[in-house]
Amino acid sequence: MKIQTDKKLSKRLNGLIQQAVDKAIERHRQRGESIAISDEEGKVKIIPAEEIPKYQKLNKINKN
Image (cartoon, rainbow, N blue to C red; front, side, top):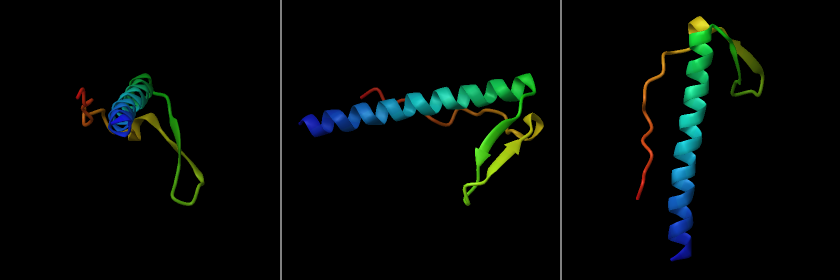
């Protein structure tokens, strides 16, 4: 039973973390600030604000 509870908590936290990241990226886009990401090879890539896609709410937080 405890394992199920932990999985639910983990799933909920992951959703909250993703939501916070999405909002932060959207704020950068709106303010005209670049963001830095790492590519598949681990190299840092700077994304100019005008290339950041507009935020779309894709993640829903599971409240079960």
